[in-house]
Length: 462
Image (tube, rainbow, N blue to C red; front, side, top):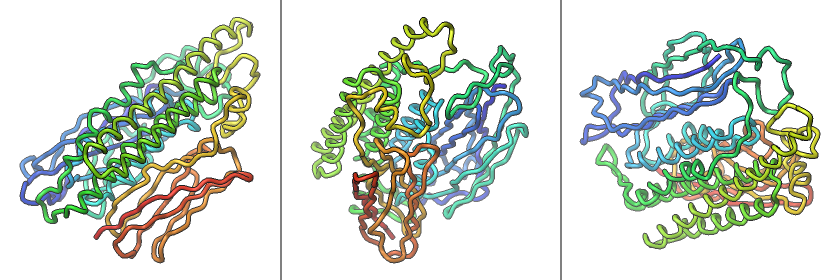
């Protein structure tokens, strides 16, 4: 079966108040996931909703993929935000980058870092950034067999009705579903042949292009003349928030491909090169966040994005070498079925969560060290918000311990696993009645005798 999902329109029972300019700067994001695969739907618009009688026609659709009968439930993560800080293009570029990266490598949820990040950014971060209005965000499950469905969403700043349509088309089974099920970690059977072909350099460039095209627009973010105008210092913190989101999103994509290359790659030199480029991107990202002048910020932003992109390219080169070796080895395997986990000299796939095993077997001369990465690492939010931060610990195996400290009285913070990957976590933070101000929370990862800590800056605004 082929499974598709479409969003036909969004209707607002009550028109969001956007001040004297009379228009709403809207961003809608939806991430859909089922056994068939995943899809990302996103739309932005600046609309006079009073003139359109509260109706936003979207008419956007995407394919999740193929699966065997019966169609599995579809998990939706969604958000509808009215952006009162003029960040529509920047926010859209961030979500588009993460979604495009996720689409290229979806077969193993252990590596689906960008898919997880897209859902968190769209539903747990964008709605709570200072100056944005949350018109509804969260998660729900759909039955794809029901076709037309109405998703009623409600946020603290408004509500809406989303008209959805799920489409299930029967397609011919050419053996994928009638054949005995193969035990492939992290992947359900689908109606398409499994593939582990590495993305091309052009595809990597297309992932990062939206960030290169829009990073300079961060300086143009201005508070609209609505019911409340952001002060100069508040605007500066909002800009820094979007800088962090953009840089951390670029780093998340690089991490995904480095970890895939560590798992599958045959060339430890290329994996090491990718990791070195990633660390260079980290240094430039830190310099960009510290920069006070516009020119210094722009230079370091560009260098950071370029370094992360080069990290991806180096990781892809390792994957290309792996794919070539795999093709040669298959001729020796006497017709053994090709799977994304079939390497020369490796009889079966390692456990889905075991990154250390993969590094030891395939890149004996280089292992990713224990590291800690946040998406984002700086965030200015409205008081009373509930939010989530993604934390990645590449180089970690099962048994890693994660803790958080530094939360003031009245603020609740906890860490929980995110998805099936042992290296990814969700840091849930409930601001509560904490007084406005800047707070630094410390997250620590401990594995065996090794540990690493990083600081997360959280600014609570009125």
